[in-house]
Amino acid sequence: SMLDATKEKTPGQIMQEKQIKDLEDETENNFGNGNTCIRQEATFHCTLKKIGEKIHTDKNNQKDDLDSMENSDKIKTIQQSLQMEIQITTVFQRVFQNLILGSKANWAEDSALKEISAT
Image (cartoon, rainbow, N blue to C red; front, side, top):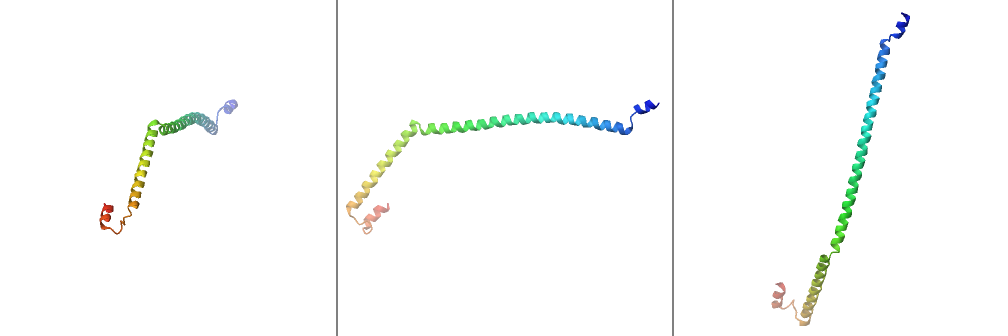
């Protein structure tokens, strides 16, 4: 009976074993969740890297598009036409200024000339 008494567990021992078992289960679950977190973090980093690469690619494509637009023949033609129009307008402006100065008319004192310049 002495041997049987030593083999039997006290309520304190039973509680202690249960607590140890609970801690083992909790540790095992937390470790499993840790693996899940690690996998999710790895997936997040891969996704973040792909997004960064996409933004970089899009930015480069936009720069290339802008460069090709600036260098296109159509834009060059339009710029040349605009430059020609500016030069022609400048010539007309100078011709009219010289005509007015060459006429030696006093635009400030002549009422008829004032009416012309007001319109």
